[in-house]
Image 1: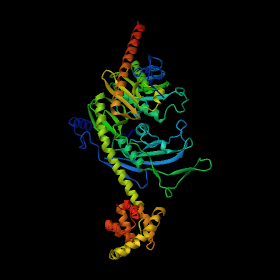
Image 2: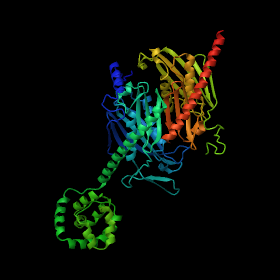
Image 3: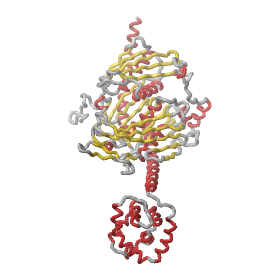
Length: 393
Length: 242
């Protein structure tokens, strides 16, 4: 039984007539996108996109497989879509329907044929082992314009995905060892550009067009066109599968509008991905247990009084500590082991660094950050300062 | 690999960049069907059969009782490509092309004249040498005209690409699998409106405009040929009637 929602005659008339005066039912202008929100999951490579009412979740996984025979030194990228009935009663569980396959193929063309993801860097042993990246897109809520939302979800998930590092070794150079993420940091994918899908809906004999149709507009529209454009102005893919006929001049106009919108969305995605990655990097810093800060405040107060003595101590230790900064792996800091604090400093961001230094009770270091210039000039040797300088400033 | 010879300007099969392959259209090849056609574009051969308008077989599929239901099935014969195809239909590419052809023909068929009925379009690729999608749409147009189904306009389709910095019309399989851009355009000939537009691989916008214009020119040339074929067919029918 086809459960697709059908618009009433009144709704259809109202939507079409309002569009003739450039008004849309949800109050947007014809070329406005709905509010875009990108959320990231706990793991690398999972993203949820909310575009107005539409919600799509993207999840990226990777696996070592054998490459295709005709492309022995390239990895593979595959897109799978899941149109669950949770999103829309018209979706049937089980085999993907036509619209699900169309969505998967449009996003696949936009990402793979335009070489957005560098597949050659996914090769480990040519002809034997390559990384196969799999993107799963789950439609959680169908509020219209699934293609755009799913595309953004795929891009966001791919931008934050980290694949495990692997090394090739063994006697014949064929054995591949995949390293645990705890042992070696996983690597990001090489993404050359972000192809953004912008969907246009046509009404009224192809004269009126709107961007980002809602569910009701989609039920009433005469035809649709999805243009996948990146911020460099390259057209990566176009999908206009029949429907209302439009003039070629209208199509070029749509492409120009789409490139403007694509630049806008690209910057949004990049901002969100950057803030997520920096938040994740901050999280990696090991925090000390809560009991330490009380001692530190006392230390800090005491240290301020005896600056000279502390500085001399610090300079003597600095030589040995600097070597330790480079070599020692991160370890739990103990109060009495001041050398262990040094490795933390190399990993931290500046803001966090001052916090950690205070909490660690490294009184000498804190003194330095409070008034770096005067101390640096006073204390020798200068070359040891320089190593810490880029980290702190 | 040089797809266009820099000295002579010939392509791999000896054509010029803006030259189309040889066209051949034949009507009435499937006797049982209401309308049928065989269309050839170079080495690509496609056969289309239309059944309809007839009673709706699956009432559950009928969405709109005021319009005819158009169904389309695209399949490639196992022997159509170089290596034997394991899955002739039901794979994702075939499903997508079926959807595309159906929506393209639906834009042209006057469905409101045949409510509560069903029109089936079956397209089978006998030989695949690039541009199967376009050949299928052209064959479907001929078959629909043969079946006497009322249409707004003739729908024709052609593909174009961009290799070695030259826009090329009507790509064959070698040029298609070169990895360059492939633009498929379907137009309503007299109304000069674009119904189908598909593109993959990257192209800067100005180059895309040139390639699309070239493909539209190709579509118009095919429309002229299809009109000739239909006129010839009508004359023959007239003669047979006496």
